[in-house]
Image (cartoon, rainbow, N blue to C red; front, side, top):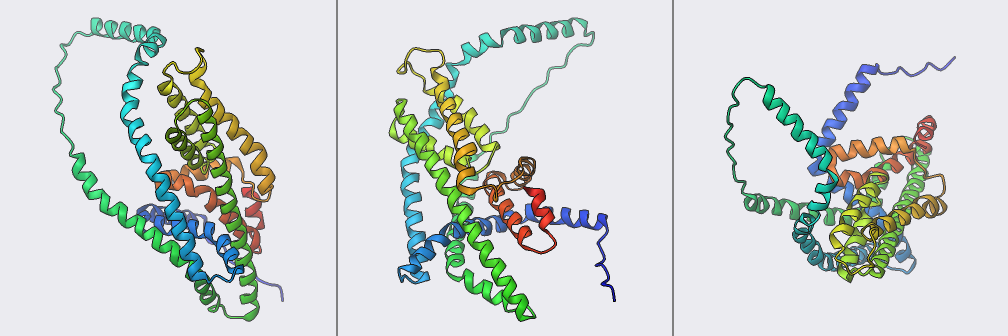
Length: 355
């Protein structure tokens, strides 16, 4: 007796379900983002926990050790970066105003053309112009900051606690979920698939985190060689490492930011050359090119490769839904989806579509 094909859902129903899922992800981001961030950090810590388990350290103690070490490193780095970051935010507008004469000379022809067009429009206008009075409402930013601070602290605490519980109890949760499957053969197959996917994703997330950290450290060293102070070099090295989690979009923002940093930091201490303010952006672009075209493909291979078009679409989608956090999580989530599709029978074609 031939096997009857499974009925397919109508295209309109699939589209409506997709839109409903996207709307839910956007509306529930206050709950979803802490969970996804905690899963991301847990995946980074899982290879370290397996290494500590070989040293006869219990999973609870290993998770606590990894979490405390990560929080201590993040706190120390944040303490070092807070001073130069706040100083740069305060000084950048003043330094940018010194660039106004140079930019004004560059845009002088366009400005003259706009003035001529406005004069012609006023000369041909017969009706008297009405004077519009604008009322400016002063925004109480201090009150908004006071209201937003407890929410931010609650979100950070939720991410820390969820990360710890995912690292400690994630295996038990996975085992109990598999126990709900009906047959033993399906349980064994599901265990093999989940374990292999978890190892590959953990290895990928940890590897890409190490690569981005090394890129930020090397870029900070280059900035030190250019005459930047150590806090400023650490600040922009950290920014370069974080931006590298968002391919294409992150490096583009990094180049523009390094151009701004070069112009605002050029105070005459560098060699007297017209291209001196462009050196930080050029160094960042060269370093990213080496990392993206040579280092990462060699370390990760082509198995983790993603289609540039699909990657750009994913960055646009997750960036629109979740902002900066969505840009940072887009690539790991897309890699997870690709690995799952490659392991599930009947979905291998979709995995090849993402490659």
